[in-house]
Amino acid sequence: MKKLSRIFLCVIMALLVCLPAASALAAPSASDLASERAELRTKTYKALLQLYEKQPKSREAIQHSYGYAVFVDTSYNLGLLGGGHGRGRAINQHSKREVFMKMSQMKVGLGVGVLQSNIIFVFDTPEAFDSFVKKGWTFGGQAAAAARDGVHGDSLEGAFQVAPGMWMYRVSTKGLAAELGINGTRFTVDKKLTEPSNL
Image (cartoon, rainbow, N blue to C red):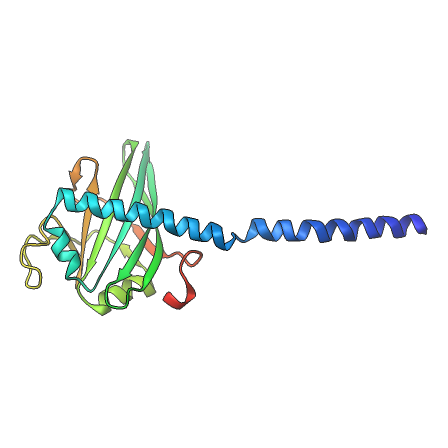
């Protein structure tokens, strides 16, 4: 009986030791989350600088927009199947609200290789920005080049209009994309990184 009691006590003690360690593994610490946010801010800032270098007029379009979103994307093709993933953040320039987001993509088509590129959205209206952030958005392939529009003049040259009040740039190491090629790409909020007050 004493033996059983000792075994039971050892099991309880082991659980008390292991549970905090297990919960630490399951939930990232505040410092880990802060580090991830800082890293993503740096990556998206560099992506904006690359866009400004490739298309200088884009700086004016973004500065005068209601908000913008920047994603760092990695796409790959392996035979007939391919996909992609990325992370980014959306910024409301009026409230300075920052929402961290993620993207995922599935595609079918011949090819082998990996392409790294940056995707930048420009939003003209609160409705376009809020819909993108709150509801998420999937690119379905309906896009038109926006060399000139009534709001920004020709500052959106090199961008594609993908929805009312919403334009997109795609920049790779080769420069601005002549076509988007991101059909089926889904953009959603990263609730792990985004502060609840910003949702």
